[in-house]
Length: 254
Image (cartoon, rainbow, N blue to C red; front, side, top):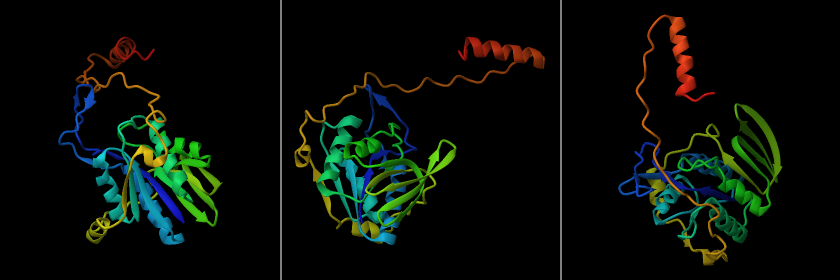
């Protein structure tokens, strides 16, 4: 089974976010493999252990993204590929590049995280499935493969759904799918010798015009500081009246 995992490098979830000149300041910041993509990598390894095959971890990003891919290799993936180009700035272009790679190399199973913890858009994997014309199911918490079919359990906003699809197909991983393993020291050492390819748009048969962004970020800012709490005085009836008035005037709830 040929498995491809779509992965992304993101800021550490405990990193303090600073905005400088309208951009997130990256100097000295710590980056990690997107936590939801860790579930996807772990699931790929488990499926390989059951069904055999090979795992490729694929990403789009700057050179520093190689560190996140090395983490996936140390976990147990077989090879990695990094598509790097300054023209890839939005979900439209990123999904085109990823889909082009998958077309070139083919796969039986595509996995990715439900969303990335930086943008949280949850668009790229679904776009890739659409471009490839293959079925997809998002936010899965269980995956069972039997021959050319897969049965998955997906999180449906508090409920759950069971879906059966024909492979090749794409699935995005939700928390609860598995418990990702930590890279072992032998795994880290082996990762240094595993195949790692760096690609440009031209290698995928794409041009800058093909992946020209369809969206534009006009501004970026931190949320306003949270105001201090307020203690309401008087009898319970008076406090309730004050609370309703504040919700109307300051909370803008209705």
